[in-house]
Length: 115
Image 1 (spheres, rainbow, N blue to C red):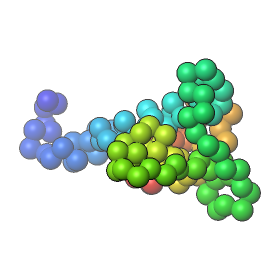
Image 2: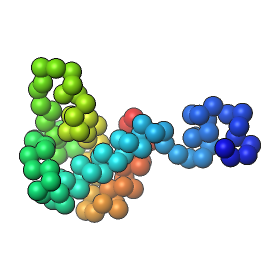
Image 3: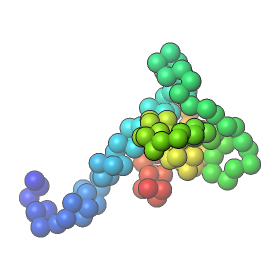
Image 4: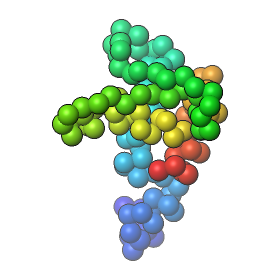
């Protein structure tokens, strides 16, 4: 525990320290892994993991990921399903980042507003 923050709630401590919640940090890691996969870093390991839907007509980003259809709710827990929902809400400049470092910086700004 950091001195002087004992009396604050969890959310207030995170805000005071400038940190994301555990849920946002997990999402951040998942979106980084998806970015690396989509840029070609994990060709063999994640082959066929995502279905892409390119579109210039969308307001947010041009690289949408299609969500599969599952009969059971367990499908919502799959990595590709969790990531696709949030990926499609990211701004175009984050999705079109030239490198992972640029994506990380843009993702931090987007997560502060999106989630």
